[in-house]
Image 1 (cartoon, rainbow, N blue to C red):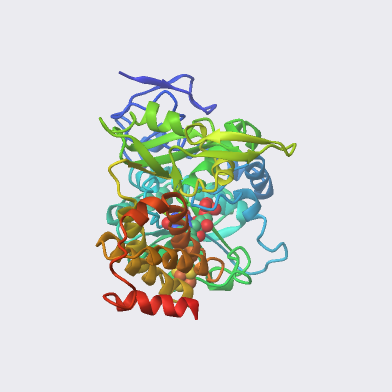
Image 2: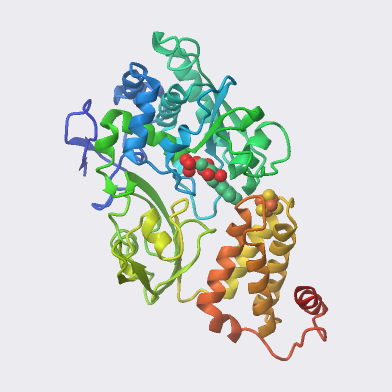
Length: 479
Ligand SMILES: Cc1cc2nc3c(=O)[nH]c(=O)nc-3n(C[C@H](O)[C@H](O)[C@H](O)COP(=O)(O)O)c2cc1C
Ligand code: SF4
């Protein structure tokens, strides 16, 4: 049955009748995913234009670039790639007296485990991204832009290449875009399949043809010293798509979606132990954990209970389903917030000690052993560390080796202590945030599930007796 969804635009008559192969939940608010899994939709430019596509670009190109940036600032849009940094503010970090070329990079690496939203946009609505990028380039003064795609997205690369060609033919790209005097080329660049290429400075190095070794910030903040040491704006796929909607709606109107300081919509990718995992686009902060996991995802599988959730991609700290958080009110008083009542926005999740991150919500039920979860995460980070910093390179490998022992039933209680100590010694001592991405999950899992982990250890294997590696690590840490 067709579903009436709210039309956010002046160019569509409201309500717009759109039907989907998977019906959106009534708590969803489709803006970015309006065309995803839409019946009769295809990624061609003809379909996009017939649906009002590139009208927002026509509006934007008649505006002054600084006015577009002002609207993006007003909208309160925060980056959807992980850190939640305000997009408009990032754009203003390009030095005002800059004489070098400015570049814009779309981060389509989508490598954070648990995250699968950008792929849908790239596959099903590439013109939405291109339109958002052209507007963003016009606003920031970039004449060359790159879409950096992870190696594992070969279909996306073909689809986006095709969409770029189509857009160039219609003069939405290329020289003198729509007769405005503005020139722009967008290139697709494919990575070789490394998580660290999602980190913006690692991505830039990779784009320059080098190993993706992240750069030290400061001084290498991309907006000042980015690609080829020129000012470079790096934004996530979803963030760039929001820009066209902000232009259409106006920053103030857009900011009415969501809650204070956490505006707009965002796509949550739910995976793991719920009846109906998948993607859900919601107004930021308007849906609670309970609504997401029970009303939208159908709750846990029969006979099981939700034990814990990793709310913002694998790097975010785990939350236990029976936790109650003590939060500070603006007047200094305290209030309690139960796990199930957490509104899914940047600030609420940060106040609960975790983060909204990339929107990848990983659900774990009571059949999951936390030692297995820990080991799974450690294996990923040990494999993906770029190896530049000793604490990250050695620490991530040690953490994996210790949790290997844990899942094999060969760890001692002392190993849990060592593991925790290794994690804390990575924090704040690395070039990029990968360090914390690997240590935070370990710290949180140990803090919240210590007894469960200890119950899987054995006193019988004394360090140094049957387990020389464990003894070596203890010796090193206490020396
Ligand atoms: C280890 C690591 C991996 C990252 N992976 C991604 C990624 O796959 N996609 C992404 O958009 N941002 C990723 N980021 C965040 C980027 O560095 C950058 O903050 C982001 O692309 C900026 O876009 P936004 O402001 O629109 O969120 C990663 C960061 C780190 C530290
Ligand atoms: S923290 Fe890890 S991934 Fe980041 S630069 Fe250092 S070694 Fe590489």
